[in-house]
Amino acid sequence: QVQLVESGGGLVQAGESLRLSCAASGRAFSSYAMGWFRQAPGKEREFVACINRNSGLKDVAASVKGRFTISRDNAKNMVYLQMNNLKPEDTAVYYCAAYETETELAYFTAREYDDWGQGTQVTVSS
Figure (spheres, rainbow, N blue to C red):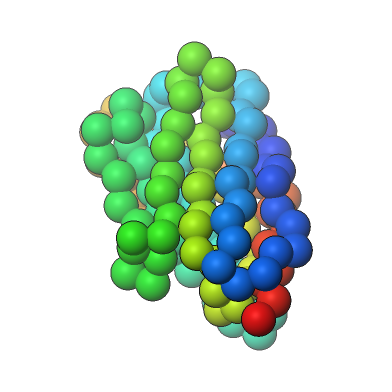
């Protein structure tokens, strides 16, 4: 099990950028695939991005492709979500999530993830 703490959220205008960070503590971070999910008011939690243990495999949702980038630094136990050209529809609480794996895969379904952070609010004004 890992403990996850997100930071970096805030209020920005459309077109601006934010970088979310997720600090992990606990067991070997490099054994975990990581993901970012978000949930807007009145909507279900949705996949944003995922990355496998060694950064060799990444995926982002179609709605953010070309604007968001996921990365990780295993030496620092950190995962990041760089968000560029933000849009009002990106407004949501963003969650960092993790699951331990022996494979090089990274899933985009929330049910695969065992550990979750508390979330950080991102608000994009038009």
